Amino acid sequence: MTTDSRKTNALHDDITFNREKLEGVFSRCGDVHFQQWNYGDGFAFQAVSVYCSSLADYSSHLLQRALEKIPGYESEDWNSMTPEKLRRCLQVNNASLQPFSLLESFENVYESVMHGFIVILFDQVNQALGFPTESAARRQITEPVNEPAVHGPREGTTEDLSLNLTLLRSRIRNPAFKFEFLQSGAVTKSAICFGYLDEVVNPDVLAEFRRRVESITDYEVLETSYIDDWIQESTLSPFPQVRYTERTDTAAAAVLDGKIIVLVENSPMIMICPAFLVDFMGTAEDYYVRSIFSSFIRMLRLLAFIIALTLPSLYIALSTFHPELIPTVLLLAIVDSREGIPFPAFFEALIMEASFELLREAGIRLPRTVGSAVSIVGALVIGQAAIMAKIASPIMVIVVALTGIASFAIPHYDLAISLRLLRFPYMIAASLLGGYGLMVVFLLTLLHLTSLHSLGEPYLTSIAPFKPRDWRDLFVRVPLKVFLRSPRNRKLLRLGGRRPHP
Image 1 (spheres, helix red, strand yellow):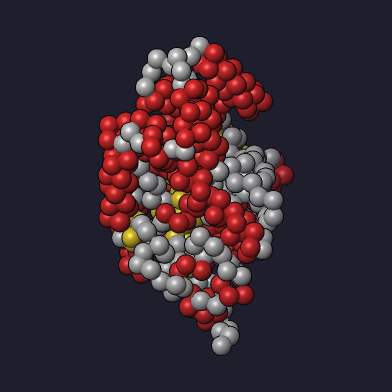
Image 2 (cartoon, rainbow, N blue to C red; image 1 turned 30 degrees about the vertical axis):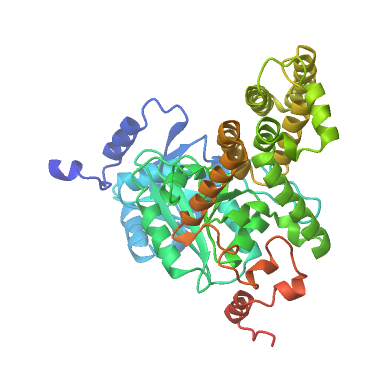
């Protein structure tokens, strides 16, 4: 063997050189193990097994089971196996050596070991075999914590990418359901997978998505949300332009609707794009209950959206600039409750909103067993103490509490955060210009929404322009037997080889 050949990335037929190089790369990796053994007549030939105990379920019977498969391709046994017969076996049967992977470079060996394979190297053979094992311990399939449902499946995603793909494939059993893979990062080598339904997804949207996601392959991606900045149209917009879910039924429904889903290895979150404003107001359970109940709940969410965004600013504008619009009895009650309060309505609302946001954030970060208790007790104590200390009026505590409850009714966390952020500009505008300031900020928000896009698609899709067909699943939901008679459903029937109903 020449010196130049030793400097290449290819495996060599000198097992001592191969092992020394691998031991150098995996030095100080206490969970990577090397096991030397011998084979052939008189055990004259050496072999080495390399595996990572943190990722591979290694056992002697597993290695034996793997090795028993190799001689079968040559009608030999290990007592009569030689390097020449082994090389011939790998050359002739390399395409049918299942479940082995044929490795020809050190880079292949590194990746295989780090993916939980047992890698077997043989003396006088410049190729190695990678044998898959049971993966490391993973979280079991459980009900999604952030998206509970009274009706419908209880199946949530996990950090295991292959398991997530299995769950999705079991819901859409059609070859038109495509999965494409990318690898990102020179160090983490994270697997990124995106799926879509061919002939249903918008080809222009898919091309734009593919162009954007391919630009992230040079960076280290540890979670699905890392891709968010590359996908979204405007990073400065408070409104989310992609949607996340842990429910496989939600992801499958989005795929049937022509959306693209993104999964990342070691992340349970599924990204759905493009996402529109109306997508954040619905849940999977809307389609598991009767249409009259679903429509009522959607109207409640719409009311919660308006309250969470405008209630504090509306109270500030009315009490400060437009008291004549408040009924006399209610106005007297408000004036009486504000007697002795040293702050104007804006600063009063600002103090209470800031306190509520701090309590909400503390409740999220604290352990689950005490987080909810601290939030409830803290809100009661601080609210009562603020009233007794004449820092806030009872009506302001009620306004802030209703605003917080309304924000909890928003089904998607990303949109709820947007409303929490936008609430403060609305309050500032109401304290400076009253109702006129509210109108100006509302028009600016509407202008921003009309100019916002998600992967080139308008953010207000289904709302504008007005199309009666799109409004069948917007603020109210028509019965499914009517809703499913849509052009998209006819296309799905054609994909399944069935003729659509007239």
